[in-house]
Length: 233
Image (cartoon, helix red, strand yellow):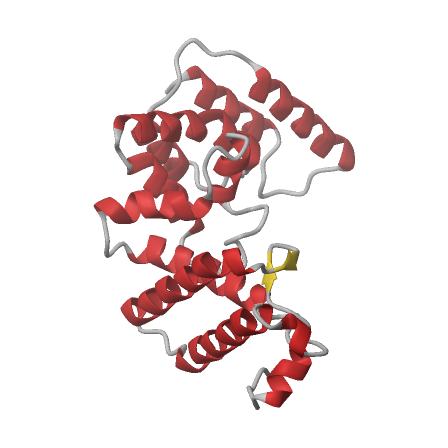
């Protein structure tokens, strides 16, 4: 076992994750983890060693410090070599947990943050899917990410369609519609019945584009929707 993994195991042997720890003990464990994260090691494990270690020691906690320290270098190397094993592993760690995907505990997001967002989660999903187009876990990850994006984009309707935190401009709509088409494709591949939601987004996006071209003719987007009897709820 490599020293970096052995030292990590030693921390959790002293401060187990599955037993009650006092506040002072939790503070000590955190301090030791931070020291471990900053320590330089001559040799780092490959992804096979990491996977074996995690499966053998499944009661340990594996959170951001661990993934940034030992997994991120493997993923970066794999991406540079055109391989996907360690990248696929990040998605597998998330599995199909709706409550993890897109949150601070999302291992793919941890990797993106650890690289100062040189990569984004959708591009990483596409890297895996370019090699394994039927990978259910990665397809589901992107499906859930797109669903959240699309749902957020219309949650201010009838005020506006959103791109980020601001109202979408006309130049944003091709990408938004492309995301909708990909969501529809993934829905079909995964056997998800989202026809009503997809049609709703299609109608609202088309209406928003038309409205943006004739803003001066209406009091608001709500006025446009009412005028043309376009459902938005």
